[in-house]
Image (cartoon, rainbow, N blue to C red; front, side):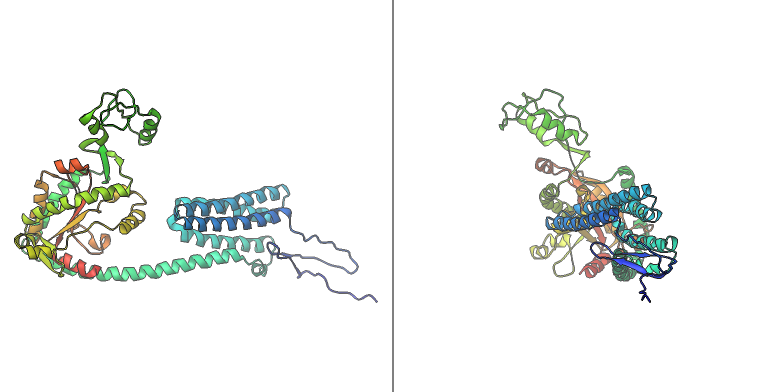
Amino acid sequence: ADEWTLVLNQDTQVHWGEYLYSFNESYSLTLERRQLVEFDIRPHWVQVLMASCINVAMVLTGGGIVVAAFYKKNSWGKYIFAAGFWSFSVFYLLGTVVFSVEKNSRELFSSLCYFVWNLGVGFAMVFQERRLTWILFFTGVFYHIVKIADSFGFQGDADMIFANFEINGSIILILSLYVWLRRAYTLRGAHRMVNEDCGRYDVVWHNVLKQTDALEGLERLRVLTDSITKKAGSKVCRQCNRMQEERPQGLGSWDGSKSGTFELQSALIRSSLSRAGRTLHVVTRDMKGDNLESFLMGLPGVVDTDSPIMSLDQLYAQATGMHPILLKKIQDWAMASRGLFFSSSGGFVQWDTASQHREAARTIKWGALKSPARAIEKVLRVYAGDVSRLMDICRQAIVFNHVSDLEACMRAVLADKDVIVERVKNRLDPRYDANLESAGYRDVLLNVRVDTELTRALGIETHLCEVQLIIREFAGLKKRVCV
């Protein structure tokens, strides 16, 4: 009698190679003895092509990100990542077309789902980069949903969920969950610290409100700051260049001398200025001496709000020149309002006294220029790379014992003919929600320009500086909190 060996039955799973991917197939068959059954369990050529190309694309994407990181091209990372997902979607689109023609509904379903999802993830990477953690999380979830739908809908076997386990989706899911949990843990710690600071600042704020005539002084201060805000309007405050003088005359270029002939290349001028949407400025053959300098330097004292500064080096050059000028200004304002300055000994020094005693003046700790590292961090994290929004490279602070002194300083600033107040943030306004906006901290922050003959000669009269007016109790607590 013939000896029979069990080869297949309705519960048998066929597992082929691991050259590229592992495919698991389930066959539901009714087998009879001596019946010849032929199986072709070779993978479809499209599956092989998709698997090969997707693996290559993954390697190229990872390599591209490493290269971008090596050359410190951080902005390239999201585009390389997005390009990787877009390349996946192209391969899945190919599978969608082929399986649609062959009427292979199972493979068509998977390919179509992966095509749409990878295409969407690529665009999300570019336009919603800050939500990357959630994008990866839902990507992992989506991969598993497709596998579950395939197991139930096409194979009709719940056990195939584990056989078709999606390893890539699981890795993405676990990675995104780890990042999310780590971020949640960090935020929880940060919220705890902020709540502690809010409690301390709230105590200080209540003590300030108990000062004699504090409420009346705060109301007068509110009227002053509201008038400045109303005058400034809703425009975005930013660092801008001087307005350039327009001379609609003949074209030429400069031979390098101050009073020589000029033959400027029109194409170069037009290309550089048209990008800013500006009228063409022209240097003419008859421009000599002061006329030429006037053109090259722009119009002193006139700010071109359509020409924001885009160079951090330019801002630091201006801030370096403005630093001693602002220093002299805050000394004048402090003298007029009984202002104090931070001392290197840890306390505060009243300026009208320190100005008469050299030793006391030497202990004052003046504000330094913002460090380049902190400036770059702020530009990237807060202003999305817009350098012109950075207005506190050159900054100083004045401290006051009473609200009335701070109000007097504010009036001294507004009365200074050399100073233009471009923006004010009144965190001492009782209507201001300090716990929500600034972790309980309160002060009055001014962004000012100093327009004098000296600043115009230096070409820095358009530079915005920051002046902080702080009540002493807030300044002392801020100093302890920030240590």
